[in-house]
Length: 106
Image (spheres, rainbow, N blue to C red):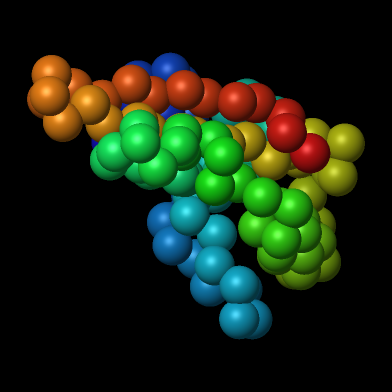
């Protein structure tokens, strides 16, 4: 769902579930001049909170570390790199999903 959403909004997907050392990046995409590292969080039951709430400090630090490792190898201009969050919240009763895209959470 997240990949389809990003493609519809003009992103080019470069990698999915990429392992960098022992960290994993859900999606790496390009949007214009930007290299975007995306974390995808999903919740199926709102009684357990929102998907956004699962993106904690530990996950952010891991993603930041992976981004720095990746940049050492690809030599992308760090002024055009960002971390985004895709939150997918499913409503089982309505059988729908709401996707929220938070840009530049870095």
